[in-house]
Length: 184
Image (cartoon, rainbow, N blue to C red; front, side):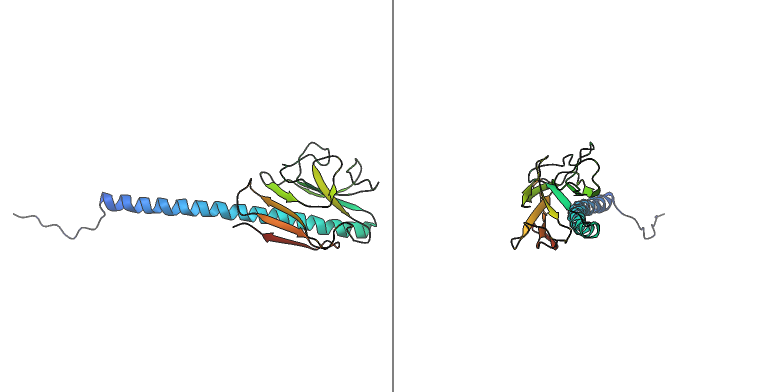
């Protein structure tokens, strides 16, 4: 008597291993792409938050009839304790009641931000900040920023020399800003 097998449906061990290898490769490519997307999104978010702080500072200076200062750490520097409260920031915006361009106890913080492992690659703001390795500019009650002229003022950030890299251009003494990608 001869045994006959019906059409068998199944996969061999080689087919199964090949499928698993292809899935692993696709997942690896997806994870690398996702990491790049997260970095890109974070960099854009950080500069957009600084752009918002600049616009908010101008608005506060005009509404309060006072002077608002924006401080950003220098190129090559990590976050620093710009407001003296024990936490580090990459930027600080505050109402400068005594007009000395330095944050003092009792002055109102408008906004501040710490960008974790983001590094500032270039900071061409016009004024050195007195108490930290940082640069600053300020808005007057009229909403203008002296020292911000025709030449773009730029702040470039990235993740420790990696691309992509993003730049914020402070384009006018009225606080017009532009955020753009400059790396690949």
